[in-house]
Length: 420
Ligand SMILES: Cc1ncc(COP(=O)(O)O)c(C=O)c1O
Image 1: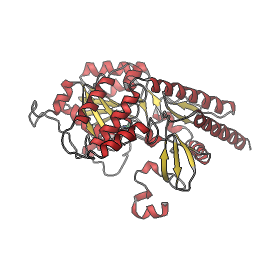
Image 2 (image 1 turned 30 degrees about the vertical axis):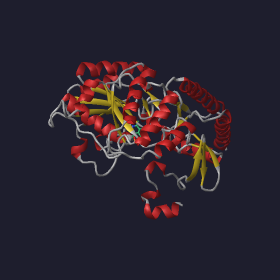
Image 3 (image 1 turned 60 degrees about the horizontal axis):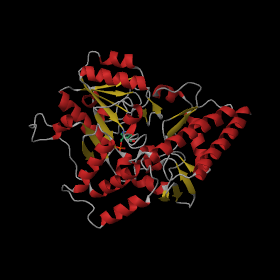
Image 4 (image 1 turned 90 degrees about the horizontal axis):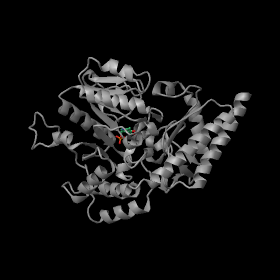
């Protein structure tokens, strides 16, 4: 398949991160906690569609709701009740999200939220953190991978990135220093760095940043594309107890279908209302497939299941068990490793150093992480190599045991190899 794909898809894939040596993983089908590859092998899936599938693959409730909706129209291109209902549901679960605009991806949501912050504050500069990933929007495609001072891609013009200020994660004094003489509209952040390594922000850092943004009239944007509806029904902002001005959602909100959303209190979101603000002061947002009825239906079915927090609590406890056990396994085998993550997200960094930011994470032994994940894949446990792993409500005790046994096998093997 890879040989065929290379002729028509650059790098043979539709998203660069899905490529890994010796060739990408080709899924034939998926159900519950399992992925099946084109050779007929079964894998317990801990990648879960870029962490979006918190209920596993094709959960019955979502399939039922979407099947019914398929008969009533897949795409209206008009307003409809499902978009109102989902925005109401989001507001119930996330109190800071009084109003919502839906998009088709997290990238789009971040792009429109940045525009909104600029329109609302009348300022141009935007802050983002080292190792923060907010999608491929030019102005935020800066400072993602170390070294943070070189372009992340060709084609990013000076104009597109000159107003972006890259900030150090978990270092409040340095953040204040870098922004002292800047007119910043917003600071966008993941409270838990996702692609940056599953690294949580310190609560004190978040609190300090919140105060600083309020003092300086900077909109604090929490990018909850990964953490939203995962760490708590109200997302990482509920989990850490620190409120943003604007929230970005994606992944889980779509119930397995493409989605993004940006939300805020009404007074901020009013900037999107062209009846209130004339063209020079109104912030535009739109898109053909925004709030399509299939995504809205799948998202609603998913959020209803997560709303009372019981399943999320169980996943968070399970996540802690995994982090503890994986940490112990490497320690017992004399392998220097740091297990990061929060709630139902986890990752491993092969380094002696405590991993508090993406810089430390980047200095860990990445080849070893790749090797660990490739060994897990060979043992029927799928994680996209070097990326974060996540849990779903579809995972069984046996699934988790399979992860532990694969990890133990790798740790022992690795210890033996390094002794030679
Ligand atoms: C925190 C975060 N923000 C934004 C995005 C971009 O979302 P999308 O891939 O839907 O454009 C991602 C994607 O992984 C993400 O992890």
